[in-house]
Image (cartoon, rainbow, N blue to C red; front, side, top):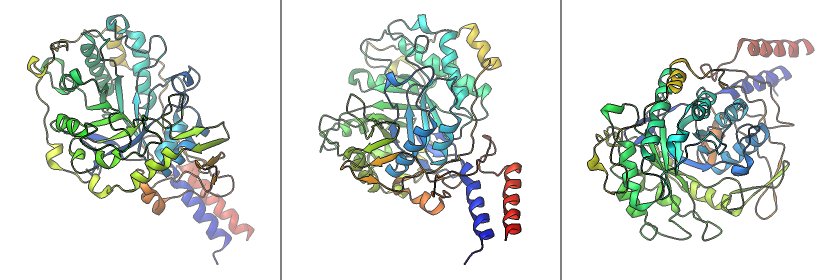
Length: 478
């Protein structure tokens, strides 16, 4: 039987690894890839905006509530996702706890830089009036807030800004925003973070939108999209590859030179949702054109798209849609999905020209608006008084809330499992089951391990002292 000293030492050593970090993701050709292994990264994700747009204020956003993030990260691990998308963020708030919790869970973040509040978005009907330094306080503020987290996968420059109501010049402004974001990242961030656009599935202009954003322009270098998101709800219920139009989408996007993924999917015209489209999206045919997708959405809101119902701060219910999606994820062949493909990563982007644009209603010129001088100053000198985030230790792994399934039975043993360094979450949680370091007993509390973005996964000197001191104390007691 192990001694008290042995048990204490082992427990403290295990807790030290809760600060481990995921491996950053980069873009190569039309694939996302693991920057260390070169393996392909396919997005298995959910859109995450608890409370909807009305739940966002200057004092609260989805990644500022530590208790909610711990609960949701643990449930997302159970579901099998590896990525979340967050639409509305307030740069002045601290996101260290939530970002670090999702990092420990092996879950990446794709973040929209816009805000629904005045001054935080581009007006699609008058883009020139909102393309100013006030807007970039929001945009660059989000970049600063999230640039040091290794699980920041990318930033969206806009979401469905281009539609039937937008003026013709809007694409040039979105591309200019991408230019400005990428120049800011190049000057003020110690790694490349991809920037892309999330488009509505507006058929007459969809391919023009892709071509406009993915082409390379020698006159406006660094303005092209690094990836392209598509919000599509064409597969409803027990549909099929052809009936849903997925065959057409696959044909349309198979020659893309950048990663394309569903930034929203999950039609709810037929309920409960059965998510049979998951097998098609991650199947051999579609996965050559798409890099996965994000289900809309995690929490149940008035529009009835939720996977989880947040009853109150103390309880939540896993809806039948959660269970159905979990079952579909569990069927996936992750070895095949993650296999690298040289023909995918070596694709080059086309050169920008008016010939890429087929619809006469879409902008066919690539002259971008000039950058305001104050915005140039922000890029050159960094955002003044920026709230820059950093990875911190995860000091709790067991969630305090009660969780129920859709039949009303309580779900036991819901806790966050801190993954090994470099691991990301997978369906079935196979990586975490072999490398989990959570104690998961009692209150779930553990000693906090403080790290920075460049030292994730390493024990700090103070903690080593704590570890040795505790071990010595145990010996003296014995």
